[in-house]
Length: 175
Image (cartoon, rainbow, N blue to C red):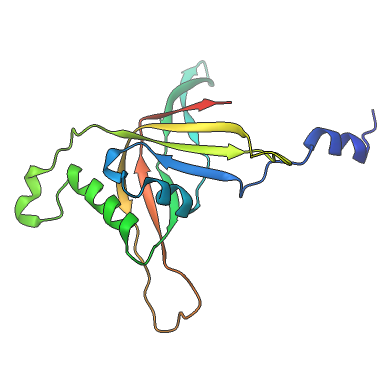
């Protein structure tokens, strides 16, 4: 059966747009900057997972079975505000797990309550507000890395940004 361009346009509709998203974090440690964090998250990704492979040899062949599911780290890019409020809140939150102070390294609360990160993908709403077409929630998160902010005399027309990497146990997906 021959396919036409109209079949393709019917199937794709208006297409999902990668710039229609929002990221939010559930932790109370970000309570003062929670809405700013959501607004100033410049880039993110929908999470991925990988199912491992178990190969069982049998009479010269290999039977392939599904293994364990692995959830990789998740990274977002944040625009730095001039007061460093979001970065300071993230550093403070990370400090609750493992202290920055070398003399106090053992006093971190590694079993502190972990939180969740929610990534919402919006559809084009036309005249009405964007509607959530898919939502992913990363469960039991903690921050593993707060990225560097590059400083340079050469950069005169850019706003600072940095990456934040979370480790999580699993994600849930909702429509």
